[in-house]
Amino acid sequence: MIMNMWFTEWFGTWGWLIALVIGLTINIPLFVWARSHRHLTIFACIIATFLGIASWMINPIFYFALFAFFISSNLLTKYRKKDKQGIQDKFEKGGERDTSQVLANGLGSFIFALAHLLMFIFTDNVILSNAFIYAAIAAIATVTADTWGTEIGILSNDQPFWILNLRKKVERGTSGGISPKGTGAAFIGAISVSVLMLVIEIIWKNPIPASTTWQLYLFIPLAGIAGFIGAFIDSLLGATIQGFFKCQVCEKGTEKKIHCNEPTIITRGQDWFRNDHVNFWSSFLAGVIAFGFGCFGFLL
Ligand SMILES: [Zn+2]
Image (cartoon, rainbow, N blue to C red; front, side):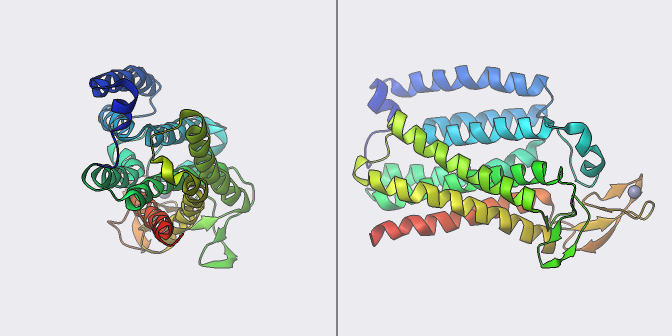
């Protein structure tokens, strides 16, 4: 083990219990609120509570990043909701997040957080242990960037560009479509997460091995950049592998398999590869990129 878990450092022998009580005290009201405002379905609430508390116990830095993602995406989803209604019809799912959406957004970072925990407990390898922290931050930065980009991008009055051919324009809300406004929002979303992580590092003095403090100032912002790259991977997967359909009744393009009460026909991609797969894989790949950056710690 590199050093004691954060709660043991902070609170001593019974630290895990104190940390768990704090985690429950913060999370239970939060998810009761989320449920009562119809942000999450019931089962999604349970999964999100588990991911939240587990992240908190592993390292509060993951928790704060997830918290920032959760709050900001809920606010942005509500923002100018009426203006988005016409376009949201294209998306597979609406405002209330279900279990697979929660996993699509949270599983990538959780895998890296777990990998970090295992490295932290079973090895003395600070660089690999920390590289998994950057990977988890990048995964959260990706889903934040994607949500911000989508929620702000669909409010743009201009038609988005097709990511595979920037001279071509596509309908608003098409997966694989990118707009300057959406790209800007994705960038701000990804960078905000990493800046927040740095601020927390400074004020909380989170127990990431102190000998590598300077590396945090290099690799956490790089994790934010990896998150921004992740948002592009998201659009690329959305334009290629993700199933996209056309309604046979109203002829509109959509991610839905049923539109106007009729089955739609597939126009590109794989019909089993849906938006949730895109979100998971883009966050996972961004994490791999940030992990790669973090491994340069060996050379520095
Ligand atoms: Zn239709």
